[in-house]
Amino acid sequence: MTTDDVERWSALRVWLYSLLNRSPKSNLAVIEHVSPGADDRLLDVGCGPGAALEHARASGAEVAGVDPSPAMVNRASRRVPDAEVKVGSAEAIPFPSDEFSVVINISSYHHWADQQNGLAEVLRVLAPGGRIHIAERRHKRRNGHGLTDDNADQLVETLLRLGYEDSTVDTIEVGRSEFLVVSAVAPI
Image (cartoon, rainbow, N blue to C red):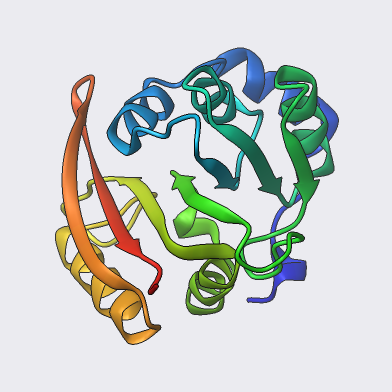
């Protein structure tokens, strides 16, 4: 799969999605877990309509987002006007190197066209000592949108192999669901 294969949502589909998913509880839970502050510059890769950007901005962080759908970028830009939101993908992030202290991805890592190249690209845009947090719904079986415990452990190994440090897996409760949050730090 290439980045050209990534689905780009129509304006109508984005509008419907935004109505039904105005502010998923998972976005707030992940932002609370990550705890960005006023000194942080946070990038949401796969930002969708901007709910996590809105929560992170409320914490005082400077925020930016990337999404492959121009309609999603438009929606997120309107939702968080002071956010810098651009069309792009995990594999081709349209920001300079060493730009962010925090990069998040909520419930879209499983959609990345090339996960290893996406993780390497995130490492490029993270400042030394910056943190990546990938949050996905916990699954018991390998199929579906999310991560199994084994998938999370494999992701930790991949992050370490790519040069990240201090990779961990945490579990957070979101309503009646559990999310796995795989985190790591860019080397200093």
